[in-house]
Amino acid sequence: MARLIIMGGGVSGHTAASFAKKWLGNEHEVVVVTPNSLWNWIPSNIFVGIGEMTKEDVTFPLAPVYKKAGIDYRQAKAVSVHPEGKTEDDTPFITIEYTGQGKEGQAEELTYDYLINATGPKLNFDATPGLGDGKGHLGEHTVSVCTADHAVHASLELKALAEKMKAGEKKRILVGLGHGMCTCQGAAFEYIFNVDHYLKQEGVRDKATITYISNEYELGDFGVGGMHIKSGGYVTSGKVFAESLYTERGIRWITRAHVNKVEADKVHYETLDGEMHEEAYDFAMLIPPFAGAGLTATAKDGSDMSSVIFAPNTMMKVDADYESGARGFENWSPNDWPSTLQNPTYKNIFAVGIAFAPPHFISKPMSSPNGTAINPTPPRTGMPSAMMGKAVAASICDMIKGVSDTPTHTANMAEMGAACVASTGKGLLNGTAVSMTMYPVVPDYNKYEYGRDLNGTFGTIGLAGHWVKLLLHYGFIWKAKLKPGWTLIPE
Amino acid sequence: MKHIEQYEQSGYTPVSGKFTLFLRNCVIWQIIQFAWINLKMTILIVKSHH
Ligand SMILES: Cc1cc2nc3c(=O)[nH]c(=O)nc-3n(C[C@H](O)[C@H](O)[C@H](O)COP(=O)(O)OP(=O)(O)OC[C@H]3O[C@@H](n4cnc5c(N)ncnc54)[C@H](O)[C@@H]3O)c2cc1C
Image (cartoon, rainbow over all chains, first blue to last red; front, side, top):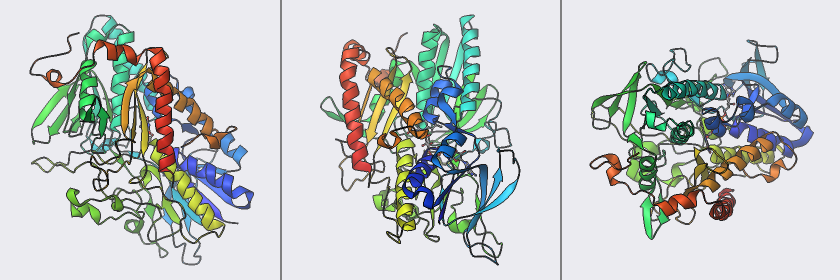
């Protein structure tokens, strides 16, 4: 009997665990180590953040789902990886620290035959002074929608703000990215338009100035170097459509910005030209930069060997070309991106979703004359993350069953597309969302004139997008609960 | 609300006309769009699985 351990039960880890258990059956063990008792459909946190959904609408308890599926669930966080075992025993293992199940604080060692790192992002609020509390959590000045609890807090603050506007006060709202090296622009994009929509519904939009602040070079970059789509006889940059939407909704934007300090009523930021600015606010939602989960690796003799399997930001090394970053933007190639997501040193370790270390950015690296890096880091959104989870689970199952010694499936961001539905306001008949697809995620200028296949890359805004968003919400929660027919819902 | 400010950001962007805005929430047109978006996304998913 082989044991597969999956560290992290989010989008990619839960997908990997569910498929692995289905394919391996009871002959082998599938263990999930994840610190939260609830699974969260993160994209719908946007609706929680404006009070249109509750925490209960976007979360469900994992324990009964894993019990039904026969998955061994440990409510714990993984702390360290020991790929060579100990001096007296070669069996690889991880150490975990329980966060629930009545064993809070207890440590345990779990041996594995195969290991998947799906620990997602560490929300690195403390990277920007004032954005964090100095202890790794969200600070007191701004709100966030990155977790369901953060989103509940954001909705309460927004509601209180709307009440003051109803009493005649004018308010300044700032939404965006809280650091020059952030990813996840899509979440900020969705939240700002949902705030705009919410304030209109509350009848107080005229009392608010809304500003977007971003590390993107231009609006519509989204960390993927922007995209071109065919529209009205033109091949047009997504920047044009994004700016059009911001203008239509009366939202001002600040781009090329690195927020370097957050105070109670203003942010300080540096722009790519090296100038320093301030922006005052009454309500701010700023996405933090992401880092790896902070796992360490230990060698057989007890010495630290984290740098062998982890990049400096603690994201895990996989089969990417990590030398390629230094070759410069002009020489980057789709071949730099990982395919099997297998660790090159330890072939029984894989990383999926945000936990794998990308070889370099997708957007062009930029820095100000002061040397401050200001550009988005590469996104790994829900669809690619889930696809990686499924592909790696399939490879590992084949390796366990003796079908192959090497991974049989790939999930390369240079060969896969991404579908994204970005809400711009909730409402069954008056809602809208931008529906986008891009193929591939990592542009290939040798193959495609505009970096991507113009037939597979499109964007449209309208009510249908909102319906798709709702369909995804209910469909993916159904799928994640492993309810009948869950395998028919595509990643 | 005045959307266009000369010599400001908003002065240089295309803005949607009334018909485009109407179509965005026109239920019949959006039902067609719904089918179209789902088709585009399905093709993308099929192309992306390796
Ligand atoms: C507000 C918001 C809106 C978004 N909207 C969209 C959208 O509309 N469409 C889209 O495609 N993507 C969206 N995304 C991005 C999407 O949520 C991520 O791409 C996706 O969740 C990444 O999957 P993951 O498995 O890598 O990480 P996660 O889903 O974050 O899962 C990581 C898991 O690992 C656990 N973990 C952390 N540390 C440890 C540890 N030490 N040991 C064990 N487990 C650990 C975490 O608790 C978590 O359960 C959004 C993101 C945000 C923040």
